[in-house]
Amino acid sequence: MSIKAVTDTDVLNRVGNTPLVKLDSLSTNGLEYFAKLEGHNPFGSVKDRAAYWMIKDAEEKGILTKGKSIIIEPTSGNTGIALTGIANILGYKVEIVIPEKASNETKEIIKSLGAQVHETTDDLCPKVGAGTDQSIALATSIAANRPDTYYSPNQYANEANFKGHYYGTGPEIWKQTDGKITHFFTGVGTGGTITGIGAFLKEKNPDIKIIGCQPQKDHLIQGWRNFEESAKPDLFLKREQVVDDWISVTNAEAFSVVKEVFEKDKLLISPSSAAVYASMKKYPIEGEKACVVGIFADDGRKFRSIYAQQNVMTEGEFDKALEEARYMSDLAYI
Ligand SMILES: Cc1ncc(COP(=O)(O)O)c(C=O)c1O
Image 1 (spheres, rainbow, N blue to C red):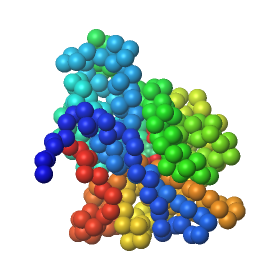
Image 2: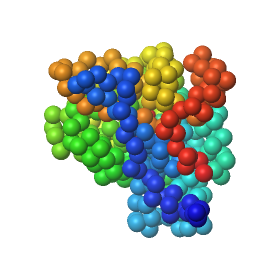
Image 3: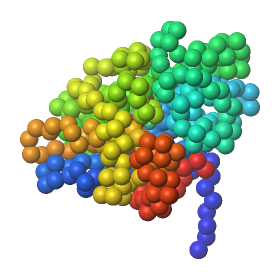
Image 4: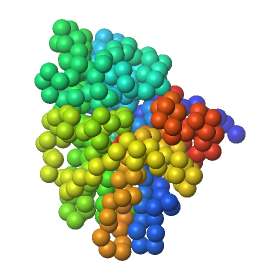
């Protein structure tokens, strides 16, 4: 038997094409529920797609110089991990501006991948809108002072973020469900995921319902945005009409399903995946047949400390679950 080492090109080729798994805990005869496991991207989240597309787009536009350019971005975590991992491979340095409320595991991963980290006292998801956000303001001011060196992809307005989902995730879901999808659920950070997938699916079949999940105010769902607390990002505003309906979900509702999903589906899920699951579970579906897909944006492994703090699982229970969980990616954070 020969063992083949994973190369940088292999890692970049592993962005996208994530598995779609059936949720037995929610599915009944005619109603089928599925999770799109974005934790299987090489740096562990849905954000690998946006990061890859934004860096490639900047390279094509001649904005980046290998060995010289520094990519700087405000993020609540996953974009920071994704940009740092992918930029390392492609030869760029990264600086990440992150709210201190993000999980310690998230910040440690970003540092261990080699990025310089600036922490701010912001809310969990950097707010959008002049004067309301320190992460975005700090990243913008660092970049503005040295435009020859720094480049900020600005995921909140970058069309390449949308394209990663319109050309990638949307077609994957269409193919994986044989065009049978009837309902799609996800949360909103920048809006790249919901508008990219939503726009693609609506072109295929305008009857597919696109449902956005809204966390409560002052929420603990890393990666998500509550629109009463924070303005809608430009990228989302551009195509917000693709969203047919919204469902609200509380921290307690999200955290209460983490153990249940582990026990019934053997998946160790993240807070945002739990919020999607809780939303799918309570959303009333009309009719007897449906194919419902939710984005599980990352897996649970970065949330050991938050789950212990929130009494979701003790650290011991978490470690046991991590060993027993199905479908954990083996490529995360290499
Ligand atoms: C952890 C996490 N990050 C980010 C997002 C959203 O990404 P986007 O910025 O594309 O709206 C989600 C959406 O479900 C998420 O759960």
